[in-house]
Image 1 (cartoon, rainbow, N blue to C red):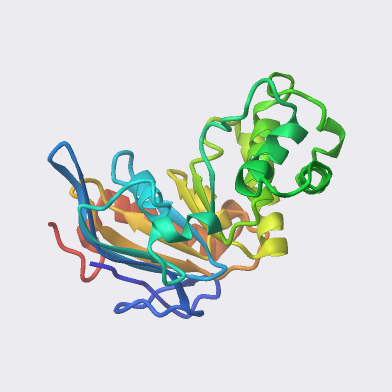
Image 2: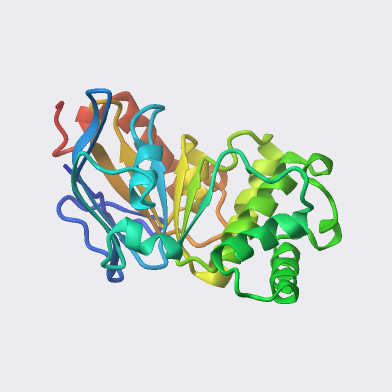
Length: 279
């Protein structure tokens, strides 16, 4: 079941009933199910994401958030149901997708520049080397690493390595970026800076972004909408539309503090939301 809340507050929209997208549905998940070794992670999951949205998937460990983005990316096959990306099955849309994982997964013997250029080479091997490197340089400058292009991963901080990973994802000019807890291993101050950088990049490129997180403040700071998952057996508890202007700071905004309190109550007692019942 999908329930979306709406109200008159400027920052957070609450409305019971069927989800209404502000733009056309770009990614559609219909009656989706996945199971591993006979254990059902979720079933009958239905969700639509609009083109250009930044959507956060929020929920406890093991609820299937990472599995969902792997299903959208065509890295997993569903047990049942359907996924489409721009009207195509995931395997056919793979060239329009890019990933940023919790670990940057950089090639250790390549510089920052060469790591980004490698992604372009693998996606478009016919492109001349000079063009690949020029594009990689442009993207590293965009993420604030123009002075570090010659450094190897071991010479970069954790936040800098993730910036390289984001530049690498942008290098293939994807329509959609799937981000699986990319900042969870970073210290709080670096995470804050990285979230600000992500918002700036998203506002510049307007890519569709699906961002997995456990962090309520992170979701409130980043998302157009927050999809809230229960523990297993997993269902969507709520979809919260966050309409506060960016940049945001959840602790400094009364509406966002109210939204955080709502999310905390939801995790404490999922049945407190109208229309949500125990499975």
